[in-house]
Length: 137
Image (cartoon, helix red, strand yellow):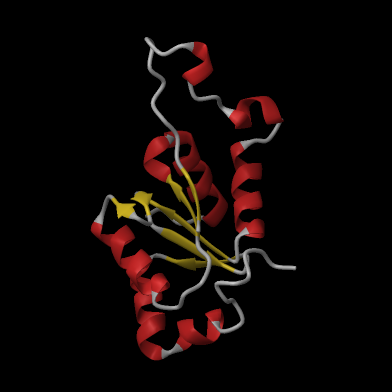
């Protein structure tokens, strides 16, 4: 699984140990970052927290449902960056989190994938994605 997390910038930390913002120097906008995430990850989850430590019940539910299918899961913690949160909302035209993208398509939130799981639709959508397949070819 691939997750993104940042460390708070500590004023007392030596420059060698301070986190760097790779986005700042890359020329990528947050919109570009979201597009790249969705393209590079067959299953991409924008959530509160990270899959191993969700920070809200809806994000936790989304992770539990997706983990049942043993698929590689990309994730970003939207609580770390309010601008990222806004960029994801603008990209999907959806106001709430978590937000799940499968094979580049915006699916919705935890309620939608739970319903899809219960009806068997999620199994169909994920059937060609295996844990051995990190990226689409």
